[in-house]
Image 1 (tube, helix red, strand yellow):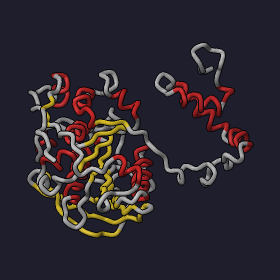
Image 2 (cartoon, helix red, strand yellow):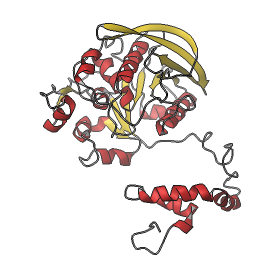
Image 3 (cartoon, helix red, strand yellow):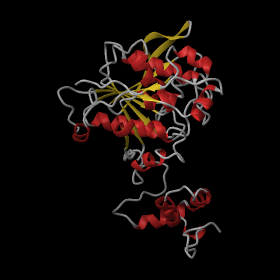
Image 4 (cartoon, one colour):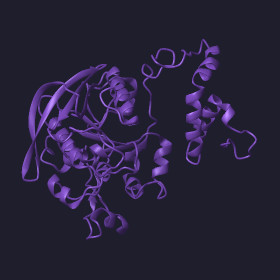
Amino acid sequence: MQIPAPFEYSRTPAMDTALTGGHGLLPPIKLRPSRSEGLPDVDEVRSGAPSEQTRRILFASAEAYPFVKVGGLADVSSALPKRLAELGFDVRLVIPGYRGLGGNQVQTFEVPLGPIAERVVVRRLPPLGGVDVFALDIPGWFDREVPYSYHDDDVMPFVLFSKAITTLAAQDGWRPDVIHCNDWHCGLVAQDARQGPHRSALERTGIVFTIHNIAYQGRVGAATDKLTGLPPAGTMLERGIAFADRVNTVSPRYLREILTPAQGAGMDGLLRDRGDAARGILNGIDYEEFNPGTTRGSPPATTARSPSESARTRMSCSGSATWIARRTVRCSAWSPGWYRRREWACCPRHWSRSSPAGPRWW
């Protein structure tokens, strides 16, 4: 299949000023053209029957439960690889080698960083269902108390992590058909796979980039840009959107929201230019992990066959429900209606149904 030439995306002056600190303009980004070569068909994924041979998927994330968890990204990075493995895909999960993860060393390699090279130790962690899990240990870079914070200016460790991912993927022993990158932490993977030293080896590997929260983008300064060895292309998130073959978000509604200037955090124009390559796919859930009938440490088991337990469940967690309700109402301007209704049903005494505008805080 012939791939069309990339087209250019020009930033607005405001974006250039923010990305360069007010000094000069960055060159236009070369967008990766939309393509299907190397990517599994939608019907293929749904049926769980990979065509011809088993597809290999390298799933890259900054966190994955139960190894390390900061937020909801860890849940998705655990449940989705397991489900893909159940459907018959050959899936490997890779996360940073944070402090205390341990694991058995399986190989080492070097990643260039400006004039030097950083050593990467690949460690095998316990499997997650049918998924092989690996930690990329880069000595001195992920030995920290907190994996990452909600500030997106600590980009250097994840620049190295992204470059280590492409180096690992380019090896002959196990070369993936698809690299699935998640959030700004892995945004550089897409650009490095297309413009870095391994672009020939990864030419037929599809890149999928998932946006979980567009507000955090991993801003890259001028000094860091020089160390990447790649052309300047904006934030880590921006590079993921621009160079990936497919871009998706956590729901169709979230995609519609971030396509608007009001909620696109400056990325709405770039996302609109990606056209049909950008999709919204509703997040799933791990039914084994989040099962009120079997989860240990939860309130009394509740199932469809024992609806009477629901009342006792609400009573047993009334204290925590009160706390949740208070926090939820304060955010009611953006909370979806179903979430507010769920909290009202769980803790009705903290809401008022008499208000024409709906539930309100007393």
